[in-house]
Amino acid sequence: MELKSIKNKIPDELYKILEQEITKLRPAQEKSIKKGLLEGKSLLVCTPTASGKTLIAELAALKSIMEKKGKAIYIVPLKALASEKFRDFKRRYGKTAKIALSIGEIDSSDPYLAEYDLIIATAEKMDSLLRHNAPWLSGVKTIIVDEIHLLNDHERGPTLEILLTILKQLLKNAQIIGLSATIGNAEELAEWLDADLVVDDWRPVKLHKGIYLDGKIEFY
Image (cartoon, rainbow, N blue to C red; front, side):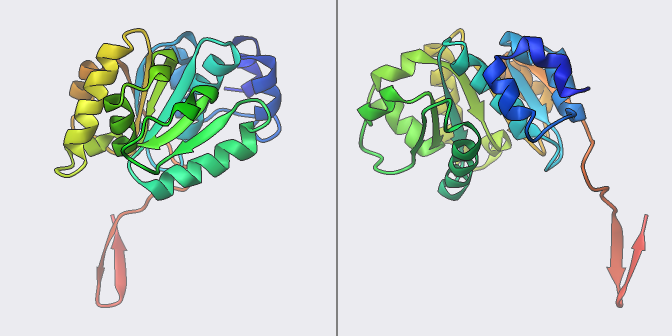
């Protein structure tokens, strides 16, 4: 699918930014669009690393922001990943959206975030913001959860599950985009999220499997 095929479905400003770096959409991105990504449908995207999951999230978030429908929150498991996403999004969208990184003091409602459009935070920080009843949360239209398979993690899983449960109740009309390279129970999780499932095995570099023994690799 060519990027220009969705030109009339996204804001002009967003299209102009994307066309500087992208001409064709990857398979997972095409599938997501066909399943209603640009119409506000919630999706669980399960595709390999580097297959284009982040752009799927960006399309949902920036379309909502630029069309003045509401804020977007991008939830990640690690501070380092949050900082990386912040730098990437700031570089690409910093002139058109107010982007904030919230990974610091847990015991704070961070009222200044009311002035921002796209907020990147760890699950623990977002959980704290909920507990502090941050008033700006009611203005969130798009919820993105990166590495959503960590719901099964014995350490981070409970916090993420409670966080998503509360967000689903608080923001009943929000679009949820879950991203993961590997989910064992994808259909079950999609049903819990009330989301359509997007699965694809395309990757930019072919993956070869083999067995290493005595200095040799036998591929199969």
